[in-house]
Amino acid sequence: MTTHLRGSAHRDYVTLPWGRVHYRHAGDQDAPVVLMLHQSPLSSATYEPALAPLAARGVRAVAVDTPGFGMSDAAPGPWSIPEYARAVWQIADAIGLDSVHLLGQHTGAIVAAEAALQQRRRVRGLVFQGIPLYSDEERAEKSASYAPGYTPADDGGHLRVIWDRVRWLYPTIGAESASRQVAEYLSVGPDYAVAYRAVFAHRLDTAALAGIPTLLLHGGDDVLNRMNKEVQAAFPDAPLTVIPGGTDFVAEEQPEEFASALAAHVRAHADGESGESGGASAAGARGRGTAPVPLSKSLYTATVEAEGGRAGRVHSLTGALDLPLSRPADRADGDPGSDPEELFAAGFAACFRSALDVAARRRRTALAATTVTASVTLGTTASTGGSGPDRYGLAVALHVSDPGVPADELTELVADADLICPYANAIRGNIPVSTQVTGKG
Image (tube, rainbow, N blue to C red; front, side):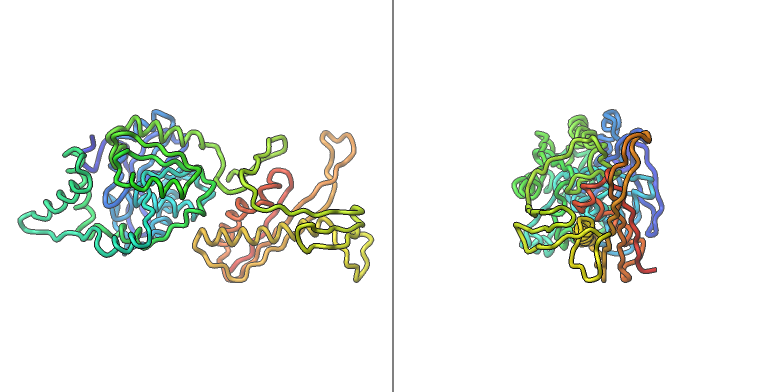
């Protein structure tokens, strides 16, 4: 049982603009990573006993003290959940982590979810160890009255206030764990509810997390076990693992059981998909010869009838499309005909532009005057080994422009959109695609 903040795991600090961030870690550098975010107002010490068991199961575990908690320096002022989430990625970058699984408990779960929305392509999976999906009424009520803080008293009476609060929340935990929590409360200061208020003010878009491999994991006596119905409705594809007899601190009470459940999820999705609808891996590529992933749900079907080939006509059976076709080489000025490459370019550009809207919404970024231009080239490809006839093929060039968005930010949005757009997912690994981004600056 952990009785103090230090513990016995490997511990380090990284320095960021607002100060130093403390974290503890275990496991091989090349193992799949789970980045662990604790509940407030506590610290990464919650996960101390589970780090070695996770490492023994082939997982690199990194447990962070949220800025302002544990042994991390405080943020420069009250942060919103999106600001805490952006800090997660700054911390990950400073540690040298790329793709990760995010585990969050309570406040940490809300931060983890928002972090996944901000940089979805880096998230291999999510684990929610109790995620508070409060109603608007409950958020308003808690914002007004929850966690009122304490006033330091010369006679030490505030220590009793903290102790009584911990015991009220977790009446069955041991005295050693409760003692450590008193130290964690004291490390934050009298206003220990700063992250709580950020949660109560935040409205999480759970639907936008669809497709990310997600596990619901907590003790049977976790205070948020009462929300299982709401959470399972929000994440219908996420399995629920409840460890009997475990409280909020099941990671320290039953570290082997906790590590087994967590490691199984991490390993199952260690090299899997990034979670974007359409099923593309963040690293790239489903190439030729790989079995296609069937749709799990049909959203819309377009049906178009073609007559006469490239010099014929296309007519939609589900919409208003009705166009003559003509071969580009035969097309004269004023010819109303189109061709399959133009139609493909139109579909790709429109789809990618919509995907950018989704990416911007997930990152809480505003687009200004974004345009997407798609150029589709028909050509031939040399036959394998240089023998046999050449084959016809396509190449795509995308140009994304928005003079109102910084170029580096727009580049990140384009990378996100590439994983969202069904056209991009369909051709990945089969058709060469080049992308040019023009932003502000």
